[in-house]
Length: 377
Image: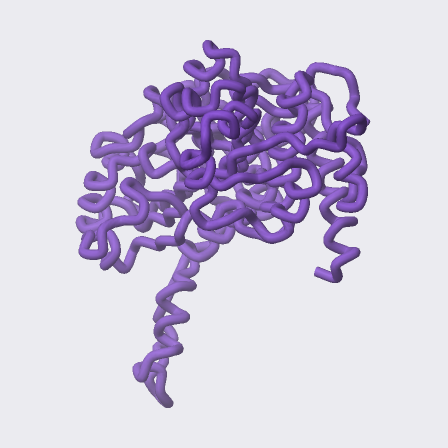
């Protein structure tokens, strides 16, 4: 069932076949700690139970040493901090598999030094997250949130609608700046290109490509400040690292156009929250649309919650039934591969060639679609 190559993945399995992956000689399912304070995505637990024995974290920590010695994997969904100290409770641990692309909550290097593999799920969530990003841009450009609130209020009565209310801006011909032209950034660019927007991007280095992908036809900005000064819509799509923490602060916000919109679907810590609040209060930029914040969630009385030029959504970039199931399926493949001593499908810091990434994403999309069609979802 596994393609024996560095980025192997399970081909074409549906729910009825997943149980075949367990040890066929003993029929013993490996024990796995589940770290998910709000539970797994829809249908994911069904898939997981076919392949392993899930033990919730509290139960695992309260178990005797013999039970903890038998635990071989961790399946994480959420932002629970996982480091060497956490893993020391499970001496036979082989792999930590994260349902999600971001791993800033996992000490990846520390675990690797202990011989523990780490898997994550980029790629399979790229299109879904890009769709939300594009939706946030549309909502910002056309004042969809306040327009909806107006129609629900007593202000929207006969003769009270102004023909000049909620005057937004076209997307056509505007310049989009993408900070982080990876898989998600490329999907955002594809959607913006369809609206005839101009695309530019900033990465640590220019992407060299001979094809006609969005990465290759977008304009590269070596300096972040140049991108900020010239973009009408700025998308933040970078991982949270020591170099990206607080990369958008007072200086960067002051460089942006007063008509510019900021869209953050990366991590809240990429933006200095207080600096952004001041910039929005003073109309230094037109608006900000945030899927993520720092802290997350914001305190109830935080000023950013009250600003009319801020759109806030609760970290829902990957929140569709199909996407979350693709992520869970990939995470389970990472988990089982790690336990079996095989290569993981996706692991932080390593990216397969584009052609292989596309095939991985396609196979998970096809398998999940088949799985859901059988359940009439």
